[in-house]
Image (cartoon, rainbow, N blue to C red; front, side, top):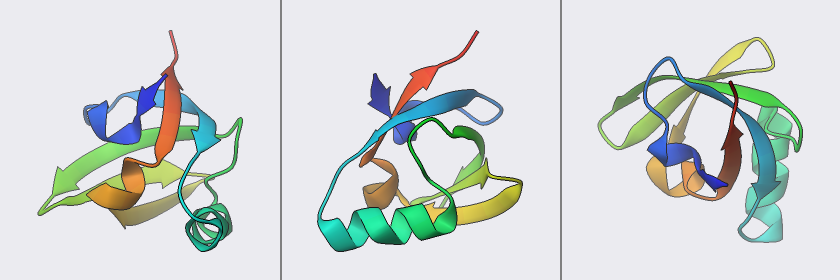
Length: 74
């Protein structure tokens, strides 16, 4: 497992664990970041990570992205 921040644009992975405080986990879950979900990095700009998750494009801070632990696919 590794944090989402280590993925390069175009790489996709399965979400294995979401860390952080309860309110952070709930916020990320509301955006579609759930254990077992697939996430693809679109780009990283100005300290934000832009990802596709559950057919939506979402930008989150690098700090939040570092709390999302993923497992590379393929």
